[in-house]
Length: 185
Image (tube, rainbow, N blue to C red):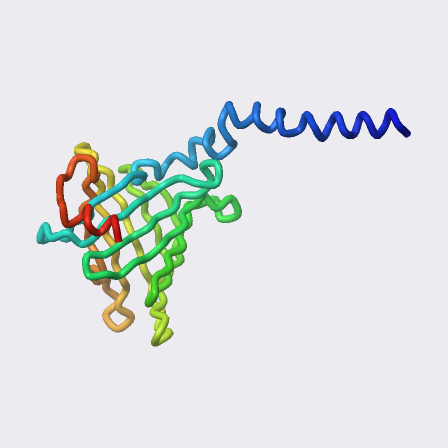
């Protein structure tokens, strides 16, 4: 009995060291190339609308040992939002769940042949309960910028309308004082 107890204690003591040794090599998610497909979006960004006005700032980071990409948006008009982005093993696709005070978006997809992340699903407006087909694309540019394009379906026409188009500029390359002020809110 005493030998069994000592062996059990020895196993429990050595477990954190074994986990730590595994962490030194990186977690499964950090080593999985599929989970690196959206890494081009990681960073601190100043986001500009098509007229080159500052639309807001966005911080996109990895968490949960590389298994989750977290987005924290602050708009120039004061709105905020949060998304969780992850490789959904059940869907075998990327999935984003966005939540703000007025909108929820749930969509999934993946990289197309051109290297653009394309997600499709539904947007729901919380106050009215209206829900529509929705899609978003994130296109990395050679300049280090990312173009984000959201479109909402119009059920009456069957067409798509632009919901948001933004040009993501790395904050480290953009000396916009207005953007820096948004980050400190």
